[in-house]
Image (cartoon, rainbow, N blue to C red; front, side, top):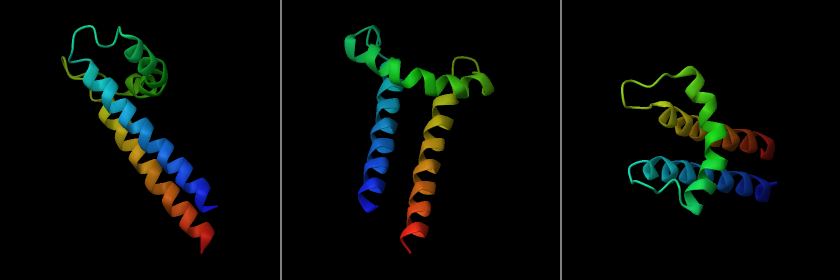
Length: 88
């Protein structure tokens, strides 16, 4: 059971870092058009699109990625709490 928790926690952590990298790639011209950028776009955009429907951009600033990362953080905390209750 502990191994399943570690696997899920690691997957959420890696996905959070992938989102952060994808967000920072928007600061560099042409970075999202690279093969790595397109791969990150394919795995990041479906998740970010959910938040973009509800959170409109404020001028040139898109706050939806921040909310998406915070949501993943809450999911990791909830996962930890769930597994600690199951293992007790």
